[in-house]
Length: 372
Image (cartoon, rainbow, N blue to C red):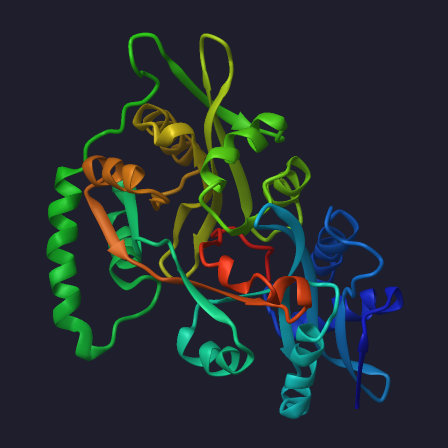
C-alpha cells in the first residue's frame, strides 16, 4: 500500500469509493462536492494538495481531504486547511490511517490546521498528540429552541430531550426533569414579533441570494476583538453560504433598514431533517448583527419562523455569540438546552507563526464549516 496526493484522475474513483464510508451519499454528490472544495473555492491554488489517497493494488482504500479556507491572523490573511472526509476501508485501517493524517499535518503552505469533531472522547485522544487546541461552540454552551409547529409536539419533545440520541436507563431521572421544564416552556412560548425598532428605524428581513461588500463591512467591528478568525471577505462568504453541493438546504436571511436599505444584520440557517424522530429544523450556523441590536434580532427571528412554517419545519434552533444576544434570546425564547460543538485548531510550526504564537490567544471559530 502507498499514500500519495490526490490527482485529477482520482476524482471519479474517489467519488465511487467514498459512499462506502458515507452510505447516504452518491457518486454525483461527491463529484459536486469536489468542485465546491477545489474548483470554486477562492482559497484553493495549484500549490495546495487536494488531499491524499491510500492505494492498494492500484485501488483507492483510504482518503483525507484538504480544504483551504482564508483566515485572519493578527490582521494578516493566512491559509487554514480543514481536514474533510477522513475515511479508510476497514481492511486497511491501522498505521496507514495515521499516515494519511500525518500527510495532512505536514504540509508546508498552511498556517493553521482545522478539525471538526462532535465526539470529544475519541477525537481528543488522537488530536491531543498533535498539539491541537479544543474550542467549544457556542461559548455560552446553550441553544435556544422555538417550536414552529406545535402539532408535531411528540417529535419535538423527543428531539429536544435527547439531543438526537436515545437516552440510557441511568439518565431517565434527568430526562424526566427535562420533560417537566419542556412542558412548562412549551406552554409559556410566545410569538416573536419583528419588523419594528426605535421610532426612527423600521427593519425588514428577506431571503438573500448573494453577499456584497456590505456583508464584509458589517463584520469589521466584531472581528476587531479576535486575534485569529475566519476571513469574512465577500468571496469566502459567498463560497460558504451559497454552495449547492450539499445534502441539505442552506438559507441566508438578511435584515435592512427600510429608510435607506442599508444592511443591519443577517443569519445563516441549515434546513435539516431528523430521520429518527421525523422532524425538520432550521439550525443557525452563522450570524452578524450590527451593534447586537434586539430590533434586528426580532426582525430576523420572526422572519425565520415564518420561513420555517413554509418549509414544514418544526423547530428553530438558535445560539448567541455575544452577551447582548444571549440576554435577548433568554428574554424571548423560553426553551433552551445545553450543547457542545467541538472545533479544533493547530497552528503550524513555520517561523512567522511561531514567532508571535503568544499573541493569538483570542481565537474566534465559527460554527459554519466546510461540509464533511
